[in-house]
Amino acid sequence: MPAHNSEYPWLSYYGHYNFFERRMKDHDKVARLTAADTGLYDVYLNDGRVLRVFVCECYSFGGAEYYETTQKLGAVDAVVINSNWCGYSFELKIACQKEKVGVFDISGFMSAINLKRHWEFMTEAERERLKK
Image: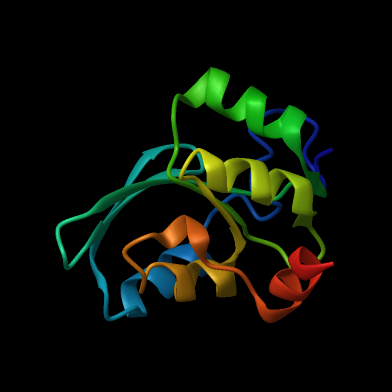
């Protein structure tokens, strides 16, 4: 369900991704960033990895939204929810981890790219939920 825009791919409410782009340019593990499509980026890391990242503002990003995203844009390495009022389902995060795809908010992604296996990053709250 989109936060504001009813058209796929749930474009940024403001029509740009400046916040995400600034965070990536400020991150010491990011060598460069290129826009591949609307909301789709290639994040080049200093260790040689290139992550294909879909950035969206979808009120509740779940399995159906993930399926639609990958059907239209192809495989991604990560999905980043770029809004404080939007989120993702925990079930999707776990399912995507099995496919080596990370699902994060912007803060989680900033932490995850410090790891070789970025898709495994979980917040403390997510780790606690997994234990239950």
